[in-house]
Structure formats: C-alpha cells, structure tokens
Image (cartoon, rainbow, N blue to C red; front, side, top):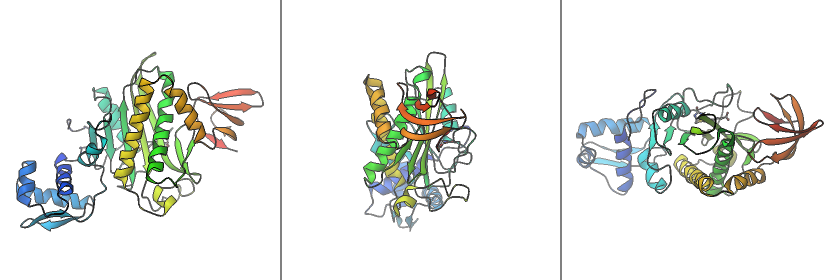
Length: 334
Ligand code: BTN
C-alpha cells in the first residue's frame, strides 16, 4: 500500500488484514495470538483494532482470551476484501480506502499529479465534500453508498474523453443488471444513471491534459446503494438500489461488479478500434432520452428533440433552427 494521503489518513491496512483473516477462517474462532502473529503486532493492539472495526460496523464476536469470529460478512470496501475479486483487472493492485475523506476525486487527482499508476482506485465509506457536476455536492452518507474514483491514463486527445464517462455509465448499468436483472436502469446523457426517473448514480470525470494529449483522467462514480431515505431537497430526484428494490444490496458485490465491468469497457476501448462506436450505440440503447425526447438545454438556452450521440459522444438535438450539438450543461425533458 502506498504512502498515506495528505488530505486524509487512509484506513489502517491492518484492519483489512484482520477482516480478511476472519473471512478466510469464517467457521472458527481465531485466537488473538494468531491474529497478532499474522499482522505482526501485539494481542492488545489486535483488541484495539477489533474495537475500531466494530466502530466501523463490522460484527465481530469474541474476547481477547478466546479469540474472534465474524458474526456476519462485513460490507466495507476494504482493499483486502476487494482485491482478490479484482485479480486480473486493471483495478486490483492499488486500492486506497478511507474511512472519511473530503472527496475521492480530489484524492485521486492529487495522487495522479504525483505519479500514481493507472488503475489506482480511491474508495471512501464517507465523503465530507463529495463533488458533483458544476457546483453541485454529492450526498455521501457513511457506508450506504459507493464513493469511488478510478485513475486512468489513456492515450486519447482531450476531445475524446467523453466516451470514458459514457463507458462508466454502461459499467454501472451492467453491474446493477448482473446482480439483479429485474432492475432496469436508464442512462441519462452524459453522466447520470436513473431508476424510475430518479438518480441512483452520478459520474464526475475530471482530467489533466495538454492540448493534444490527456495526461490523466479521474472517473468518479457515486452510487446510492442502501440509503433508506434522502434529505428533503433530494427526495424528489434521488433514489437508491435499496429504495428501488425493497432489499439491501452488498456494496462489496456492486463495487466488484462495477470495477470488473469498467475494466472490460476500458480495455476494449484501448484494444479495439470499434469500441467507441459500440459504447455510443449501447449507451443510446440503454437510454430512454438519447433519441426522440423533447428537451431543453438549460445552459445553451435552446430546446429541441434528441437525435442520438455524435462520433465523439456528444448529444445531438434537432431544433427549429437545425441540428445542435450539446457539449455540456444540463439537459432536461420538457
Ligand atoms: C454528478 O452527478 O453530478 C456527479 C456525482 C459524482 C459523485 C462521485 S462520488 C465519488 C467521486 N468523488 C466525488 O467527490 N465525486 C465523485
């Protein structure tokens, strides 16, 4: 694991190792002595770390004199829990976990600027300054959502980066459907995933680029997973997987499915010349609003009917004055 981040301390890696050991010996009580030997510390320090895990919501039975066992599978996005399930993908080797951080995108951008490798992933249980598009905030309550930023270093011109946001939307769509095929998410150009017309996921892609070449891109993905309610100002526009289906979801399962799917999309984009076309085509298929929807483009101040995505992924809108290309801004049905 790399050096602690300046903005917030990464979660103590020993917490993840204890959880991994307890998962690997799930049917037995593991002695404090064994845990202490495995992670290279004292039994009293193990006891202290177990208390910290309990504070994080991990259900551990036990006592220093007998040993410890897991009462239920923890749903924390710890590197030691995720990495084995992400082996062979771009995202299995450099996973950074924070109990609490301002924004995982800010952490990823800062790490990228000091040379963090492609495929680094930044995950938090809670964000105190989660960022959305424009000046929006992203509601990031503790351990109910997925707050994830992935660092990529694609050899793309800056004008082609939008396809990564579209690919991330497709990855979220696939991850949800892989876990419950009855849920049918709806992609809203360029960066939202909706269920029943309400937002379940937002994507914030940020990059550092020269004129002709991208240096790095951070794809930040926020998924509302187990929220049972939202603050009053979000109630009409936000939903969670739990609210939409009536059951709790495993954040670990959703996060693994998401990163595996993002890995497939990204690799194919790098390796296959037709991948960008495929991403645009599949985005249109999974979006009820990318074609034939009457919309108003708020920042552009015009309205018209959507006509799909152009070759770089920008939304085409037929207006009374002719076809317009939406480069950014909020597009709303009208
Ligand atoms: C939006 O819909 O406006 C985009 C929301 C993006 C939220 C995610 S949560 C993880 C990452 N860190 C952030 O601060 N923002 C993104």
